[in-house]
Length: 69
Image 1 (cartoon, rainbow, N blue to C red):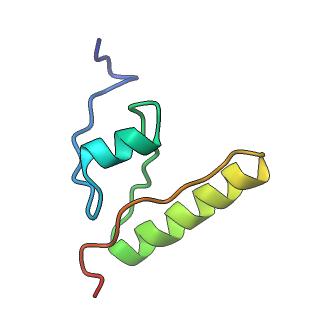
Image 2 (cartoon, rainbow, N blue to C red):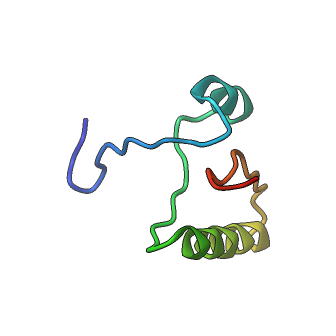
């Protein structure tokens, strides 16, 4: 069930389909970083991933920036 503590989030994942992500990751949960720009979001993503990695978690990035060439 959805609650204020656990709301539903709808997201567009650029460069990876839902099925591709689910084939790689066995849970339907993703980590998100909120930011005011794509560059700030990338910085927040890398910082969050670095902390997780330092805590011994395996970190995988998937997708691409929509403005990547």
